[in-house]
Image (cartoon, rainbow, N blue to C red):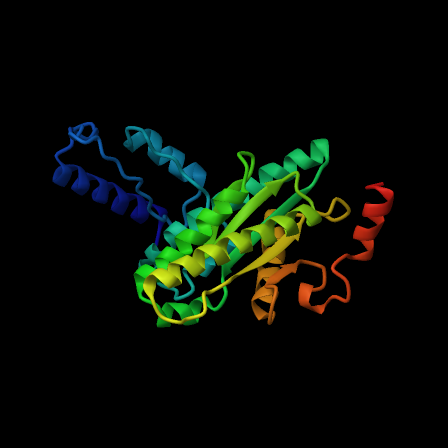
Length: 276
């Protein structure tokens, strides 16, 4: 599909929406009594920012922004080969891009000032099975509880995002491996208590679900990028999900349930001799 066809369809859709919504000729919507608003997004395959800006200058009145979509994410969303099927994935594409952009900003800061950066990704242990066993409202409550527990652990400088259905990520500037693992353990305790209360309120003798945590840390000796760090974090999360207990895994390190000691040799050097 050509760029012109995409733009023509977009213009027709906007005009139709304007007519249905009762907007003015200039495209400004009438102010509703409750001043409600929605954020609308549409995927334009084959269109880059240059084409969008040209179209924007000539046709649109304002309040628009464009977010570039990486080829990997677009191909993931369009795996069926049908552009009509990408709309359910659009929100996920946007969220992935926002997380990647935030990580890129933190990496740029580190390149100037140095420091540490950790990424923590979490999800429910056995979430697919839980989605079949539990009512949708209960699963939603567990997901919301997981997000709340993450929010309780974060500070204002940390960024909370979403990387997939039921998968949430914390970008933690200034946080190293040891601190990130302590945060993961604290978050798990908070969620276990919340899940136990939720299951007790629902009745039954079901074992409360737990959450798994994957952690990736920035290594100043390696060349890192947002996709690389997110891939490492996702791999660590997969390993955490495979563990029989603990359910915390760190990219590039042994799983907690496979260690003879909870402290790596590099961590011992830090504890006894400092960071240098």
